[in-house]
Image 1 (cartoon, protein in one colour):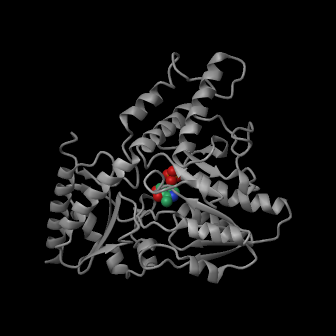
Image 2 (cartoon, protein in one colour; image 1 turned 60 degrees about the horizontal axis):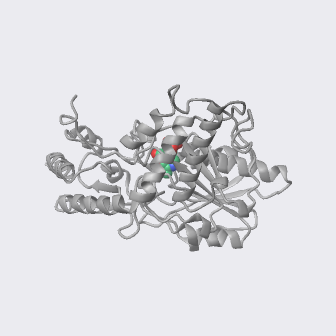
Image 3 (tube, rainbow, N blue to C red; image 1 turned 180 degrees about the vertical axis):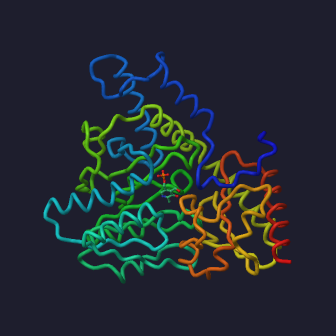
Length: 388
Ligand SMILES: Cc1ncc(COP(=O)(O)O)c(C=O)c1O
């Protein structure tokens, strides 16, 4: 299908097209003329050049979030980063004889956090799942209410993957540090678009991914604050790469792609965000006249690229199949084969019927105003037909 015949792509929160500048940087790592070698090969110039490319990428990732490159560990994505943060800390503390066994997270976290916590529950850990506010943010007062001396980790995402709502992680992390617990945040949906100056925050660890910001899939990073002395234990063993925390040859082309994507974001993130916010407003204005429409999530605190909408009085199962000119999702891509309503939407209080009749519309760097207008026309047609 030629690009002009394809539906408008509004699923940037699942994956983004790779920026051509990123593709070029990645391709340069693959050939005999480029930095193709094993970056851990210490015995020749090919290895040294590949290692230099990896360290440049590490510095680019670090710069976006205002930290030192020494605080960045490359992983395969935010899923692995979340797992390393949660399992690695539980294991590291247990090895040190720390007896605390309580984790606090939110019921609307990404599955990569929820499933990792559920695994620890099987091993005897206790997990509290905080109920978010109706706007999809997590309130520090609620955290205080559930906090006790057994808590060693609080993990709350900066931005929710379905609603786009942004939680004040700095209020949450300050509270945790005062009480002697570590604070982890998943910034897969927010890094680069929301202020993430982690050097001046109490965030102990942050998960990052490249696929949401026009970088390649299959690569991410974990920020680990040095001054927080996080006793993280490895979860993947091998050649001792990534400061012994993640064995395996670092995929030079992947991390170089992530580094380039983050470098671009460092310079263009603010202007991208402004443009995306304008397009998001255009989408809201175009859809607002539809009868029974509900805009989910926070009106003030949201990422620029995500809009969650629900509709009353329609059969939600028919909504996505009725769209002819829009490619979007009902919730996170990981759950989209599932007919159950999104746990995130029911988690903020929507009933099952309305939650099923929902769309996550997410836009990004390459979305145009013309595409937004096409999406408005198609969604309006489909909803009005289903409401008849
Ligand atoms: C908030 C959040 N965390 C984690 C992930 C998983 O990221 P990755 O595909 O890089 O493992 C996603 C992807 O949808 C996400 O939105």
